[in-house]
Length: 212
Image (cartoon, rainbow, N blue to C red; front, side, top):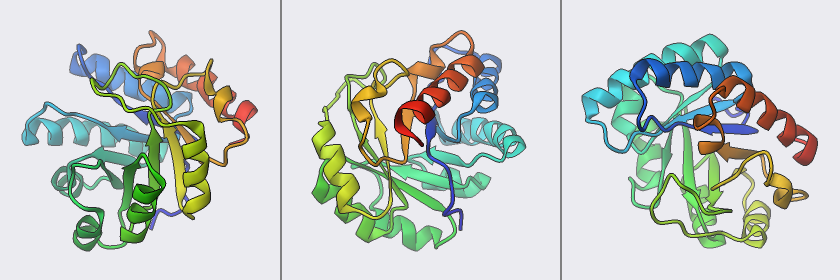
């Protein structure tokens, strides 16, 4: 099992307003720039469309040896052979997903409270995404999570924890001295004209500021 996966720069995609060619180019740029893991997030695509783009993204991620995590859709992840799946609060229960997927696939979970984090860990999650730390433009409803809650979650569970929500290279100082394993980035990379440069600069800032 991929238990040694690196979450330090957790890149989450957003294909809104992009052609497939532009999207794949931005993805490759981010991976070549230093993203350590990628989550493909497509809320509005049909199953067939999701499978198609996931397969194309996987061709790129395999080239860089970076795990591909599929957001929400266990069926898509299984069908195209992704390395993992990320499940939110309203998705399939983690325990059931683990039962279906077995021990080989990475399962990530969203948690906003210590209670939710403990439940996800006990049900078989390999890592947690915790936030939103700051307001975000990628989701209409944003429930903010304090850095104190983030710190408490890190203390409560033995699995990796990623901070998510409106984070960029200019505001991650708020995460200093919190024992997270990584920082999630959506807009900070996707909205950049040069995703390679954006990922490289963000990765360097994470390393220098947070030591991960």
